[in-house]
Length: 246
Image 1 (tube, rainbow, N blue to C red):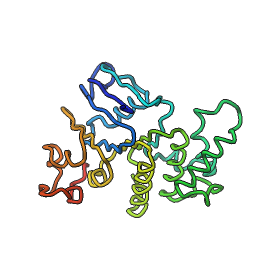
Image 2 (cartoon, helix red, strand yellow):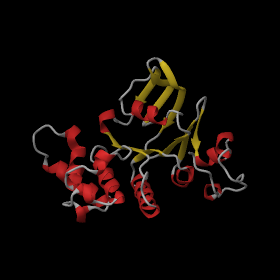
Image 3 (spheres, helix red, strand yellow):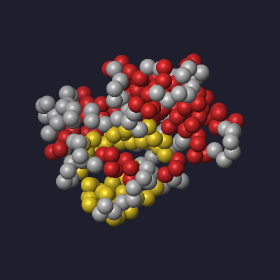
Image 4 (cartoon, helix red, strand yellow):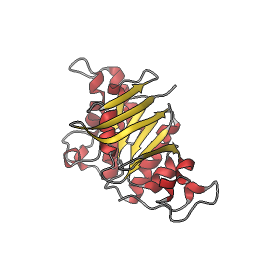
């Protein structure tokens, strides 16, 4: 069974397509990285997945009981997020808003927040002011918030932007562990190296076409080879050096 099924989907604005005729399937417990040059439609695709814009044509089907309001979403960091005047715990709990039916959070929702703060390693700073945290700590808090909205699918938009190398590595490891624990991950990234070292599938968007397949298939595809420093001669290809996209 597929978690998400794209069948000849065209996406765009005001009747003008940005991405045309996308057909692919994402199965439960896959780790998919979406890469591509600026203007290739990564953001447009994300908005469509989240239900913010409808497809111009084709059909998107969600399986395994997933609905769009049960997707955990970590957007790109903004100045507003950095300066959010709330405690870490309040930020994380706000991820339960779609499931909140009263003025107060339920015991179950509070337990969910506690579990996700523990998963992301921020329990000891739960009472700290969010805007006083380091960039890496803020991203961990926002990831915990996204986890409060889902048990099936995380969508992450450039989650390491602005982080130092150590914090970036920590975030990639954390996301990979969540995937290993059974959560499907879709990550938008400009970092091809990180994509092939972490993902099980690659969706590479270009302005006139796309590639979707396993990491190994991608590294041996025409579009993948354009970003390889050297061609890959062996099965250990994911460890070869790769150019990043601008």
